[in-house]
Image 1 (cartoon, rainbow, N blue to C red):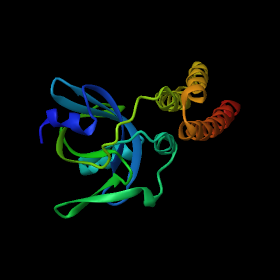
Image 2: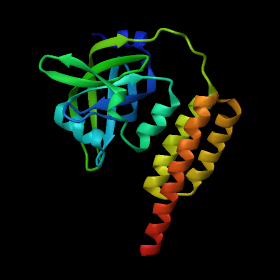
Image 3: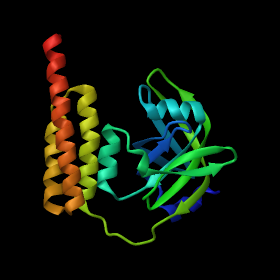
Image 4: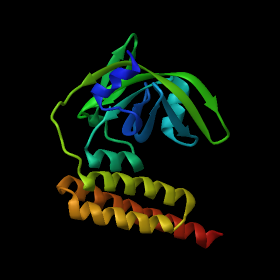
Length: 207
């Protein structure tokens, strides 16, 4: 499969926000930005995550394209239920996919570079399937809640309260422009942020 064919499956030049599914033995899902540039595709995964360990071990995974904000938010902070997965059979292995994604692309890792904090890999598309060709206009509420989820992970890592202000601005857009799914995702995200705040406060008490 050629990199140029990825356009048909929603992975275009720049950074595409997808949900990466990995783990031949134990399926896992997590939002990741795929980087497509100069007819090549890359991922950067940070140590300490299940996704990092799965991809490091198996060197194969699926990139799932979806506009479902609930899947993005839920998979940011916890693993999805088994009922959300289906499997692509490749030789004797089963690669997990998201059941309700618009499309899924199977990638294998090519050249891999490791640093103390992360792994960067050029990834090679192997096969792809499109499940939903229905067009959907860009919704600012959707993009805003995804951006808010990214800020939430950075707040958890850095404890920098500036990210809370960014989250508030994003979710203001979500409540103004989003549909019910986007607003439901925002509520889940706010609950997760409350839990993060408690952990951050607890950490300060012990310092």
